[in-house]
Length: 269
DNA sequence: CTGGTCACCTGGAAGC
DNA sequence: TGCTTCCAGGTGACCA
Image (cartoon, rainbow, N blue to C red):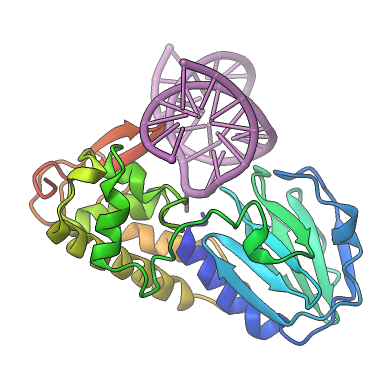
């Protein structure tokens, strides 16, 4: 589920519920996530949440003297529940904050829950991350400069977190459709004019997805229904063989870097 | 540095 | 029904 919009919707749901509250309990039912959940994480009780931030697809829970870093991987979700709610099969981690329970469910266990007391910018997972796509830093000239030294297909370029964070497999295809660019085009062959359209397309696509997720947000966050709603309106993603919503040409699916890419061979050049 | 491949893990859908 | 195969929203590690 989680690309940048899902993580951001989760962040917005959590921030007002967690900020200022003290962590009263931690439960680790399954420490074998992407990396083992350490003893430091179990020692969280007593700390107060100062803020909930996001960098790329990482959620950062600021605890004053350090940060809890949470990544949802491919299948992770976070929910706010009443304390005492029975845990399901893949509910691996709980954070209790008084009368609130924050629960991580992650069937595939590609997610992560880490603690760092050092500077965030120095953390190995965060230090080399690229530009935030929704920030002003991602403007056409910047995109063009980033793409210049890159010979891989533009689709894979978009998903390279060392250059741009947060754009995953769904929104890469969707953004390229919106910009009218062939996903197979080499990144360094994307013109400045195309970068103009692409930068706008990325921002539009991500913002629209955040809006769609935010509207269905209630007592839980990061639910599957939000991206589901968005996906049902996708231009190309998961629509192989179906007619393009713009020109009725059959949508194609190809493999790029072991991932599926969807595009309209007529609208995207 | 770049670019390509593999690995991690479970579950659902499709095919036989 | 049951078995096999493929596919899935991420990304670090390792290699040439």
